[in-house]
Length: 221
Image (cartoon, rainbow, N blue to C red):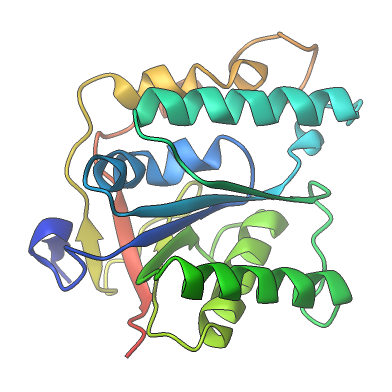
């Protein structure tokens, strides 16, 4: 199926909520969407599901604090506008199951945010991704969108999985050349030995396309 430009789609004027499993996924998966929405007063917030501590063996509060600070810097390099941020602080790589009290609490919290901020569309990591936190983020987004009592479209971005060919897709406007790379380099704990041995983003991720491709998973109607 052909991709449709966001600016020519039904969601051209939509107000968006971005949900990222970890700090850095906001830039990897939805950096161009964030830049476009922030520039057009259409960004209703960014949600970070986990504390990001699973990226390093020590997994300490210091890692969580570092990754939170890096995420703020990265968003600042993408958007000059003030951006509302929600930190859910789930433990990295230990998602709460859908029947748990914490999952229900955060579903209600996001549903209320969707209503209050008049969110029309959500972009979140796809359920086809291999990492459990990426799958959990999708499940939480889906649950919150259904509970919001509002028509909300659900779109997926693909950090580690392939974009499905047969699904309906929209393509964001391109970011300025080098902006995504500049934002990713704000995540120094993921691109350098800043806080010791740990996960490193593959070098090819620093040369990603300037646009985001989003897969429509539920149109909200």
